[in-house]
Every structure is written in C-alpha cells, then in structure tokens.
Amino acid sequence: MSDRLHQLVDLLVAALIAGTSTVLWGFVAPPAVALWIATLFAAMYYFSRNPWGSPKGDAYNEWIDDLYDRYLP
Image 1: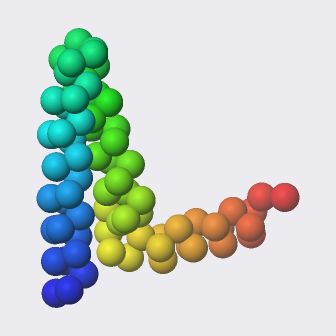
Image 2: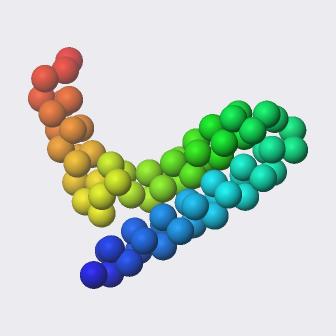
C-alpha cells in the first residue's frame, strides 16, 4: 500500500509541475509549446521517481541491463 501511496503523491507532484510550468512557459512561448515543455518536465520528474511507471521499475532496469550485458559486446 505504501508504494501505491508514494506513486500517487509522485503523480500529484508531477501534475503540480505540469500546471505551474504551463503557466510560466505560457508567458514566453505559444500555448502548445508551453504545454509540451510542461508535459516533458512532469514526465521527467515522474519517471525519474518511478522508472517504467511502476514501483518495480528498478527491477525492470536491472533485467534490461542484464539482457544487454548478455547479448551485446
């Protein structure tokens, strides 16, 4: 339950980042560009906290790294 609560809080923080960034970038960029930049910032935050959008994201990354090590020179 705690992992899900942390993920929910991360989503709320990402939404705050997106909303604030949209408003701030809206002063210097067209609305579509401001929204794109804000979405990028929110996604960067969220996926840095929850890789692959999952509480088990670190395990996925380790599995992918092991796969790369096995098949790539």
